[in-house]
Length: 207
Image (cartoon, rainbow, N blue to C red; front, side, top):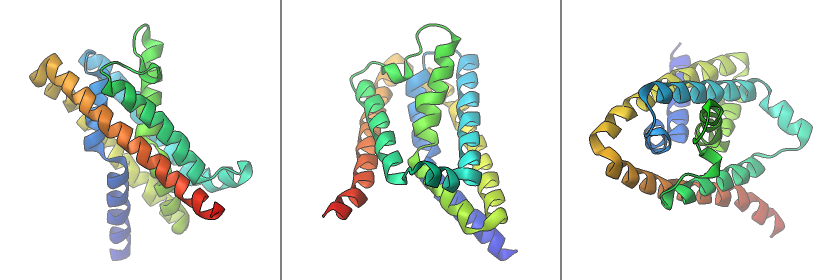
């Protein structure tokens, strides 16, 4: 039983470090801070549901799919890094990226929930790789533990997202602009780091 507790704690800490709900709450605030609480709740709900089912999918079938299509985690890191960098670049310049533009009808809100919130910010290459690693190392019990712990983390992240609206009401529009630009810089750096991590194994093989 103690081994199970140790595994649960290990998986939770690993997911928490990779997913980083606190930093992603700032990103969520920058993306949907100008919307009503109901709209924020709708976006947060869809983003985290999509995130959960993506991780559920890769926990059960990730390795088989990667082998089937010849996809590598490094390729996933590079692609995700490019997407994150583009979003961060536009936020750093004080305006929304086309990747998460929310002007228009409700379909745009749904698009924002899927990208960039669910993919690649929440269910990014690191999160997917972590899920595959933990689920593959413990058989069916490993899969159940991984999915259960990630579900708890999704609930925690949802609560953080919902409370982000209260923070925005205090800091106002100027504060939102500052948060958006600072988060844009952080996202650009994260994107660059993801690309570098993805390129290192490729470069080492060539050299």
